[in-house]
Length: 395
Ligand SMILES: [Fe+2]
Image 1 (tube, rainbow, N blue to C red):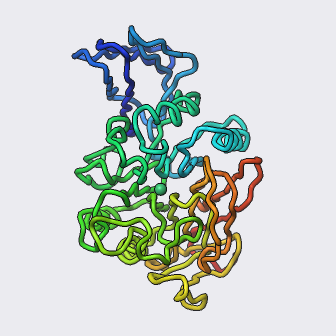
Image 2 (cartoon, helix red, strand yellow):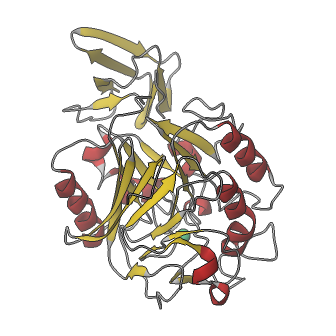
Image 3 (spheres, rainbow, N blue to C red):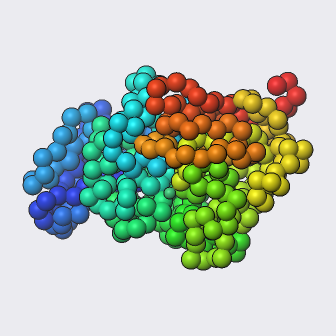
């Protein structure tokens, strides 16, 4: 977990022991040690400078730690800084596909560091156990984990075991931006001029007046950032392995309808009311993307291009700063960071759809954001730009 002035470093060791973290910025070096011995280590470093990169090393006797090139960076509130965000979905299967997608992202970034790393859930198949997280997440991504904080939402496979909330610590009190949710299940995260909603579509009630919907309304009402992005494992629209036309797809214990239906009917109207710009999900192991759309709460046969498409462009969209609310939202399913599903890919709201391994780099600048789907061969398979300005007529 990171905030603008703190960072939390977590690790586990084979023996019960007291761990320390030594960190430095420029030439000033400090050290924090734990009060108690444990196998589960968690050190919170406070009073840090905003948006700065500190080098650090972890000291834990029973564990052999590679401390070369370890650093962390605090969150920043610089409204004009370009932010590069890696969004990967359903990455939890160790293998060639996972490696290719990871390598393709690194090559695309050309050595530039990521400002955020977002995991769309199902990060360790098949049950999200600690052992599976070690094999399918910590080992393959170990170099990136040395420098970059992974921010996750829970997937259905993560929820099969209890390791998820041992591995990750999330803000309860709005420490990383936004309104306090009082739970680690859903929370907000802010970086630069971006407000990100990290939602739980797996274990939380998705009804209109459920606790997450109530928090969402409060949080979005208070949001002052220019760009707002919602992240959740289950997509409201998909035809790529999972089907958002099937009321029983991804069964929920809270409702007769499955999760995809509940999100579309109950959560999407709230996101639209507060003009959320982008929604990213995984769960279907494909890539699917909409145009700028709104007010589509039914099955795919009720999608009406005249009613539901706000801008019928392929790659360029613009939202006016003056026309809130209902400026429209672009929905992306990107759940193919490690494995592929077969699907008809025929949802009319998602015309840009590929059965292809890959992940998304979202580059946010002061007046525009660019979302690029980088496939496992390193090619940009889909890309769109969303501008936000006073007057969109010049586009
Ligand atoms: Fe899933």
